[in-house]
Length: 445
Image (cartoon, rainbow, N blue to C red; front, side):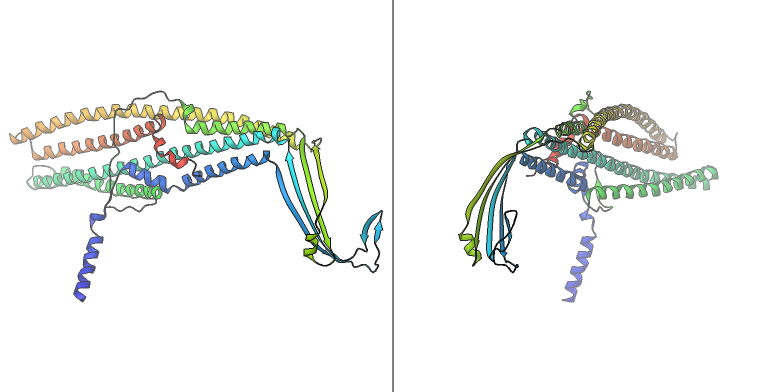
């Protein structure tokens, strides 16, 4: 029995530590995890719900207000006299002890809300729309952050893979040179140069491993998932068929968010102007009153209609120390500030997209140069290998050529990764590739 448990434990240890738990991740999978994990995006989605509720709540201002009041009391006369005490015809004492019940129904309707509060409804409607575009703006920012973090991880991964390949080639060159040095075919200096290259490559690898760990931590921070060194990350697909068209920045969520904020501030200025108008209120009150010397129930049974009041109440500000005036001036200045903010956003987005496209174009040209360079080096390697079979070239020259090709392949892969990054960013900006995730920026109720 003990042996069985021992075998089970050994199996579990080996199974849990085996690489079968390694996962393969793509950019799309990492992006989905990051969106689902983002606390900022969740907070923005709550902002949408809050603004929607505020908009619905604003409709209450144009509806009547009705309330029901009730007062129950036990009156005890503490004066020594048994007769009624009056002052100015009003009874203030001497009344008998009794239970009293009063019920009153009141209703108010602000007629002035039709010209004062309707702009407020529009104000909250604009804020509701702003919250959606603000969430979409944050979503785009998150997508680009994930893209940059994933690209940095892939770039470091590419450099690490090729550094291992180049290091193995250098070690093979070192072994060959050592053999040649022992035979007196090369100088000790030539051997030392190769050994120095190996040390430099080991130093570079240590730095690349540090960068890879930092990039992996950044991905973990964005996704809320812990990754292992056994996990593999696929390179971002490069389509290389992107057609640039001049974007309409006014359709971008960043611009729409600022525009809706401007429209909300226009309504706020309208509200500030209308606050100078009078308040007009229709009101009514219906009263029931009952009393009893004996019990509370008796006072309820004796309830009688006592009064019905209805009227119009009007009030108009004449002097408030400048409060309404300064409120209007503040709203006007905030509106002008927002207009400048819209211009700023438009300029920044245009400059950002132009920068992306210029970098994309330059990297495409650089990639073509690397491809041409690879063809030349591949031809050189083919010639060297043929010459080696004829005894005209040494194996050392073949290894040196392969090392040079590996360096060019590394740089070409890094360029492809950077190009894929820019291609994705241009797709996000111009083709609206973030729309696929806009369900996270919609009403839930």
